[in-house]
Length: 213
Image 1 (cartoon, rainbow, N blue to C red):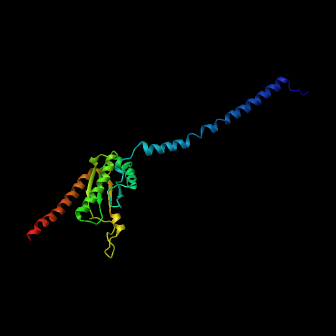
Image 2 (cartoon, helix red, strand yellow; image 1 turned 30 degrees about the horizontal axis):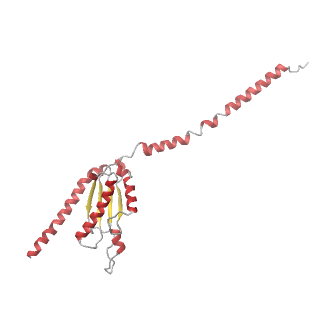
Image 3 (cartoon, rainbow, N blue to C red; image 1 turned 60 degrees about the horizontal axis):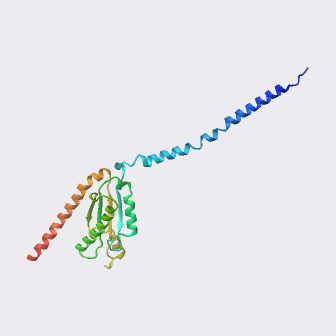
């Protein structure tokens, strides 16, 4: 004789099935919520920490070297020159606190004295901009060369002026030293200055001696 399930047994069976289904659905739901936020964020945080948190070791930095153009022949800074100098001020090399060397150059037009003065005015314009924007003047060394070190011909093969070359030669070379180089730089600058002084002495002696000859 086969007994039909009673109402109580049907209710228990239905309850058990619902419990099983509920356990399955509740077990599957949390998995998508746990993973999306962790992986990429931790990677980017690590990268950002390495880039900005630890800072840059001055010993590992190469000196910054760039050229500020004075192609128009005046000692006035152009907008492009100001933008380049602003980039230098924001550089990690500048932040390292090392010596800054400004080498002024001119073209060959004019006398030696006039060209030295022209190169000085250009270098001092760069120096003044840096100082006005928070750079300590004690870090800055100005060296003037006048027309001595051209990087382009001042004249064409036929002897006529090379205007493009002269414009290129009107410049200030900026070097921002870092790490150990920054510590050694002042002695190197003194050496260059002494050599320039020694080279100038014979010329002045020759000028004073020439009237008597």
